[in-house]
Length: 143
Image (tube, rainbow, N blue to C red; front, side, top):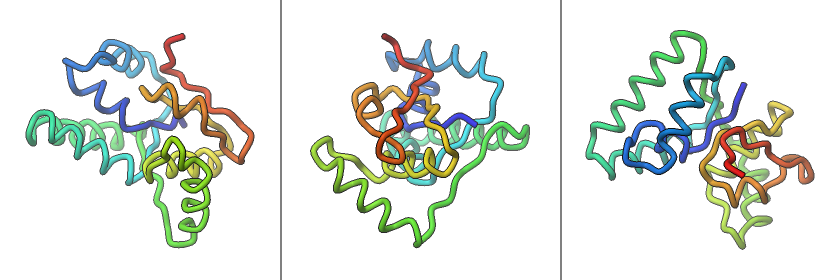
């Protein structure tokens, strides 16, 4: 499974986004299921709906429903037992700062046991470490 950050969904759906070509190309060649978290989905929907009213948010939901039916997408659920770990990470990376969406992806990487991610956030996901020492491998990185 490949972890997906908010910026990827924005780049994929907003044709005016600088990352649109890279995000579209990635989805066409991706053969693994995608996974994200509810905080990321909430953030992506909020940002998309601010860009293009409701249209892009609904397009994202339709795409995710389609991918989920095909077995290519799932959502990771955070529960109350995760709150202390999320708080600890957000304190650790307060200088960036780390938001809840990013903390949830670090938690997801720790749960999955890998940090393979697609993100347009080059700075933060070069800095974050899952299990405090494993770097993320951004499959969308443009070096």
